[in-house]
Length: 367
Image (cartoon, rainbow, N blue to C red; front, side, top):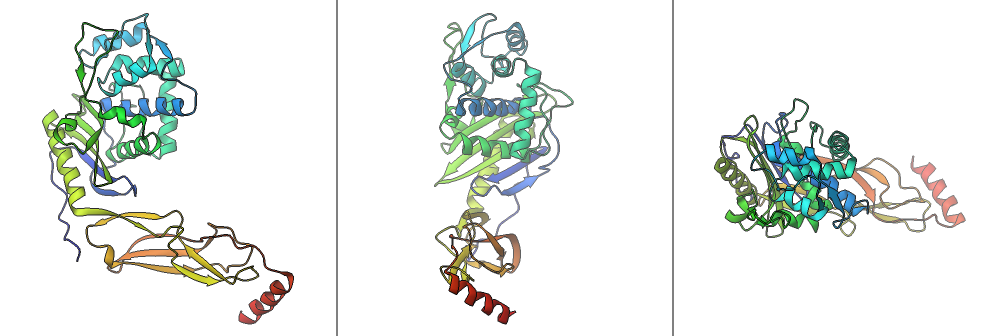
């Protein structure tokens, strides 16, 4: 028996989104597509671009970046949001990444962007290209650190998409986001800076991602937690205080873990049905969904899930695995949830000459 799902918590924030990592579905939201300032959560995209450059061999953790006056001054002018790098010095990319992720350094963000693209403005265009590729439909970046700009905006939904991509695409490097503090060896007089994400100390299931704050944006937090092998990502925007963003984020994550579950269905080893194959080396073909379908559902409701297949194409060999042959509609208590392609689960080559002739005749008769 499924558990009744209450409404998502009411919170004093401008917008929020809660996303199920495995399925990519939003579980709960409030104004998820309203444009907001991302503030320092911008740096998640700065880091994403750097991680991708490293993954493809275009950047190394051991490379060093020359610190420009612009990078140094942007850190100096932003008081607390700095890594304390000095103009004219060379800093390892690995240090800059920790300076961005943990210390939220504006100076480190500018330095990294200049090293990768030559200038921060060119790097911002790279960020926008990545945003488009990831499906962040209501996002535009103007800088690498999150300083206010009329052309610098995002949404709660888009930030959860970015968080999901970060964890999915770079699981090993993502672990830096869980580190509690960082001390830059190039600034020995500066004490180790704690990670701005206070949820790391409050909830052991939380392992990221990034805070943000400006007077216009309010207090924001993109967070992720994993419990019992299931991961959720939350974006809380426009809270009135740092404590408010943490409390709201935890309420949202707890709600998602308590009242929803992620269900995996079908896949290569779980056919929906079998159908007749014409002119093939085999007469029966298993059809289903590739890859396996994941859905975020109210906890305990999976028993009420039904799959209704509809064959729209004759299965005539040769057939390739993944070839679309129809659709399948997933319903919960009679309500359609999603319609996805119904595909062949294996290859079926052509049969012998006489078998093909025989099937051609039968196909004509059966019309």
